[in-house]
Amino acid sequence: MQTWGSLPRREKSSAQPGCEESSCWPGPVWPPGWWLCPQDVPVTLYSDADEWEMWKCRSDPVLHIDLRRWADLMLVSPLDANTLGKVASGICDNLLTCVIRAWDRSKPLLFCPAMNTAMWEHPITEQQVGQLKAFGYVEIPCVAKKLVCGDQGLGAMAEVGTIVDKVKEVLSQHGAFQQN
Image (cartoon, rainbow, N blue to C red; front, side, top):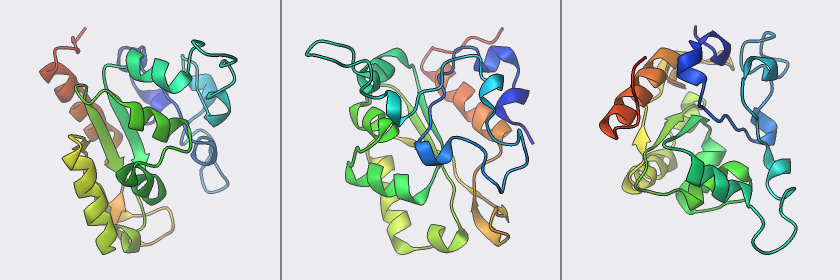
């Protein structure tokens, strides 16, 4: 299985990872280094706490606006059921959802749903995924396998290699990716 740390440097050198407070760091379920180790990431990691720290008065930089201007593409991976619901409804109560709400829709936004099978199969999920697609966002579909909770079924995030390949494809279509 590929992790951020195992990707070739050229594939991560200009990425700007960010995270929500609750999903950023490995928890007790994850083996050390399995998910995201800050020392493996050669760029600044932003969190919700950073959103307004640099903002003191009118015309100061606003992080979610700076990030949406900086990026050629946005990848939300994994996109859990909670954040899916927020994005589909236009709620922007953290750094991630603020960047998405402010996103320049002429640039690609890709999302990788990941949740328990029961959540994935709930009728609201299909509506919410459909809403994101109606915004012009690109789904990288979830897959069936053994989930973190131990259940077997649809809802696991796509494999890292699949995600990287889709990002390359979309960037090349937009003229922003050059293979070294």
